[in-house]
Image (cartoon, rainbow, N blue to C red; front, top):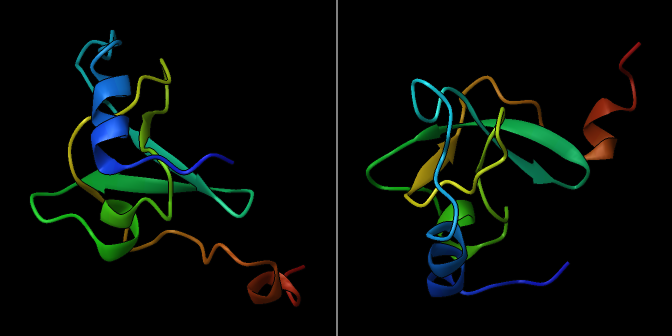
Length: 87
């Protein structure tokens, strides 16, 4: 996976806007093979601002979300060891 600077993510996202109606109906990000629900936020989080979680995308049209976001409070833990006992 190629890590991009914040500026690179914004430039790439500016090329394609969300075409859904209403815009940005649901957001998601992928981390460690898990798709996590994410929410728009004014402040962002350390992981989303630093690029550790990659880009947030519209879950329908896959457009890259151009603003700050955080993982949803009920998002699953994105590590395999956290799911070892799941049945």
